[in-house]
Amino acid sequence: MAIGQSVEVVPLLWVNDIEESISFYCSLGFELQESWKPDGSLRWCSVKLGNAEIMLQQSDSAKSNREDSKRSEDIELYFVCKDVEALHKRYIAAGMEVSKPKVAFYGMNQMFVTDPDGRTLCFESRLRV
Image 1 (tube, rainbow, N blue to C red):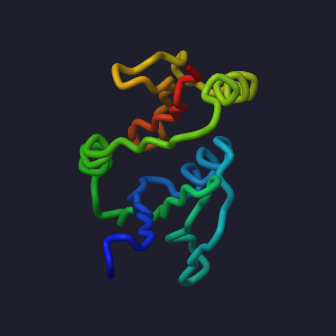
Image 2 (cartoon, helix red, strand yellow):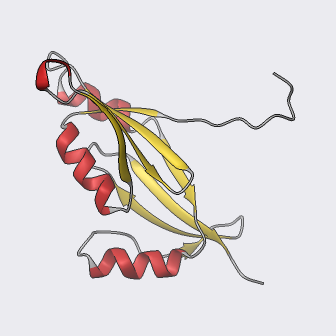
């Protein structure tokens, strides 16, 4: 593949409770795209918001929540959007717990939220100059 070609990344997040995670991500505005239900039990899905896509997969029950929680701290996801202030108002009106927007040292207005597995999600937009 040539460097100039378009490349996408779609992270896979292991989750402790896939139904809870789907509900959370859908409350952020993501839409369920695909799912896999072997034996009728939901084990994997993909959710999408604009051009951002995430795959969620149910952790094996043999894994402890502590191990899954530790892995969740290893990654933060940053979503670049058009207007963090408007998104913040929407999430607050929906009763979600989100941080107040603040400006990062590199000039992005940012708002943070934590997913059910302890991952930090950042929604950010460029400041208008």
